[in-house]
Amino acid sequence: MNTKFIPWIFVWIWSTGFIAAKYGLPYAEPFTLLSYRFVITLLFLFVIIIYKKSPWPDSRKDFFHLMIAGALIHGVYLGGVFQALKWGMPAGLGAMIIGLQPLGMALMAGVLLKERVSKKQWLGLIIGLVGLYLVLFDSLDLTRQIMFDGFPIWAVFAVIISLFAISIGTIYQKRFCSNMNLFSGPCVQYFSASILCIVIVLFFENGEVIWSSTFILAMTWQVLALSIGAILLLMTMIKHGASASVGSYFYLVAPLVAIQAWILFGETIGLSALAGVILISCGVAITTSRKSLRNIKS
Image (cartoon, rainbow, N blue to C red; front, side, top):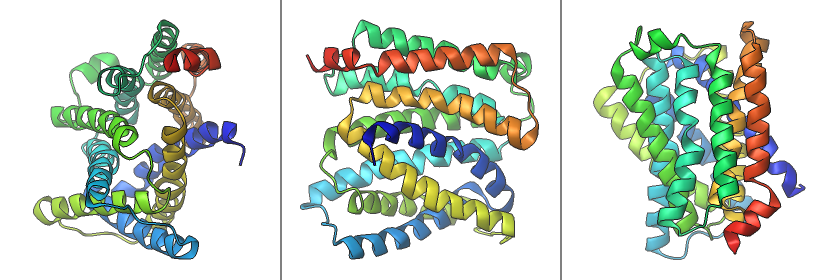
């Protein structure tokens, strides 16, 4: 596959996560759903690892780093988002908070990895953030959201925790797991995330699942497309790209979610949202331009 298409394929698949979660959560509690998702994913990855004879990490230290990154990127991030949706937080508000990730990643990359984030990249990141808010503006009643009408304030904290988890986890992955195998590495990470989720289920959830056709289809998509396909693409992007540029692609998730909501649920896209899509595209183009990347590496 031509590597230049990887980010765009990844963004589309990743954007379907909100839709898949919406279809799956009525039939299982958040960490119960994720436990099944991760365990099934592990089975698929084991088959792939055996077929491709993929090497496992060389040391216990490598295993430890992979498990930490996995717990953050998969367990804490997805767990927080799913729990917030289960508590009734609108998907738009959740996406708005998670949309702060690229700025967080750029800042953390500068502090933790000593990557130089250029002024041009900061400009692109800020333009993308403004575009993100415009995309979501039409679908949000800001007065009601600020008052947390219809969902507990804990849902906000859950998404904020998710934001920090995916940002720190991605930086941690680039710092300590850059040489991991694309199949055995995620396998170790999902093992870590599954343990975390199962423990939470044992203490806080009943573990019940309604095995409807909708749930099975949603689970199938989450396993094959999101947990295997999208994550392998993300790992490839992290391995070959600077952290700030990888993070900027997440700005494209919001407009794609808006388009999917329009197609599936009849939600309209206003002029401000269209303007936001244009700004997001410009921001991503600026942040990921070759000149910006050369400035980071210089």
